Length: 263
Image: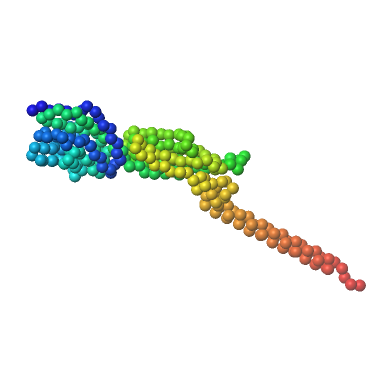
């Protein structure tokens, strides 16, 4: 019995975690042949079709990664992997026994589902010679892999950073002027999907003329207390000055009255 490996063409398939992927190959015209699906990454048999006996079987590898995830189509002999994960990425192929057939093998890439990036204010600095304010921002994502994080102004790319490892956190800074009316956004993308977060400057950046935003609550309380103390001290000094002048006037009048007697 001869064995023919179908490795003529690799069909590239990219999917997102949680989706289902079908390794679609129409073998309805083949008869009396066994069809074997193998995961090359694990060098393991994962499905077997015995057409003569009408048996369709799926198997799991030792670590259980394919458990309850494999489905065979009785008509086309296609294999579907449901609720796919990054651990299922790799090469899949067919073995056809008892005949010769040109077909396709599959290379499956699985990407994590992307979250929307988060934009936060890193710091705010005001120029002493101008009312303009520069706002320092940072765009962040957590536990990602095989992605690119980018800042855009309109349709123009300002900066970007990429990572190929898994489970890494990324941060990308941006410096803008508060008065800037341009449209900014932070984009997280991989080869098959993207997530975008638009920047609202008015919420994250504040002018220095606004004491509520420029001064922290503690500093504002301290300034209020100092102002009150200065006011109280001024009132005390004023009252003391008035009383001192009145006392001096009274002493002058008494002295004047005591120094002259009637004839």
